Image 1 (cartoon, one colour):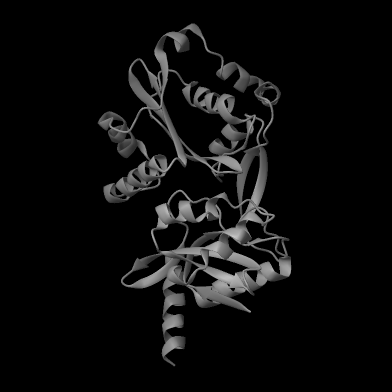
Image 2: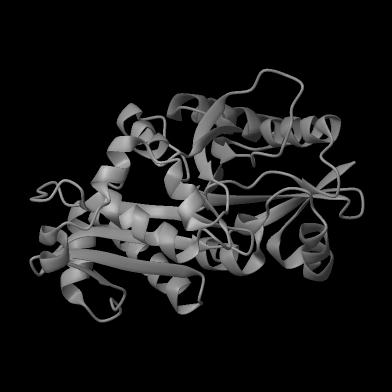
Length: 304
C-alpha cells in the first residue's frame, strides 16, 4: 500500500498537486527547497496514487543511507487532503521497519493515535504588529524599545553576499556544528537559498561590529527562524530581542512566524516572552548504537 520512490521516480506534477491540496503546512516539503538542502538525496514514500506523500532525505555513511533531516529543514512528515491517523501510522511503521533512521520530524498537523516522542516549537499567528506586540511580556516590551543607545549604535543590514566579515562571524559563532567543514555546508546552503529567493538574511551591527545574524526561511504559508546567531559578547543585551522584533515588524501581518523550536529552557523562555504559543510535533530520534543495530538488521534481512 505504501511504496518508496527514488528521486528520479517521482512524478513531480502529482507531488506538487498533493502538497497544494494538503491540509498540513508543506513549506519544507516543497521540491525547490529540498533540492537545495538535499540535492537529490531525497525521495518519497507514497500512499496509493499520491493520495498521501511523505518526503524523506538521507546522508551516506560508508555507503549506507541513514534517514535524517537536511540542514535547515525543520519538519517534513505526511501530506494529504485530510490528516488520517491510521494512514499516518502506516507511514510511521514503514519508515521504522525499512530504514535506519537517525532523526526525522513529522509536521505539527500529523496526528498519531499512539505515544510518540515529541518536540516543542513556538509560533506567533499572523496579525497586525500592534496586536502582536500587546502580547509581549512586559519585560520584552521594555527590551525592544529603541533607546538612544540603540538609535545611535545599532544598524540593520541585509547586504551580506560579498561580506567576508559576516561569513567569518557566522563560522565562528554558529552552534550545533562542530567541524568547520559542516559549518561551511550550512553557510553555502544559506547562500543558495538566499539566491533562490527563499531565505531572508539580515544582521544587527552594534558600533560597527556584527552582533546578531538572523536567517528567515520565507515559506508560502509562514516564515521560519532558520538560524539565529548572537555574539557571546553583547555590550547591549537587548539586541537579540530587537532583532526578532524587527523581523516581526516586517512580516507578521502577512504570515505566521515559527521560531522552529527548542527544548532548551532559556530559548523556550525567550520565545514565550514574545507571546508565542507552544505546539508539539512528533519525531523519530535514535542514538548511534541503535542506528548501527538497525543497519545490521536490514543488511541481514536483505541477504537472507
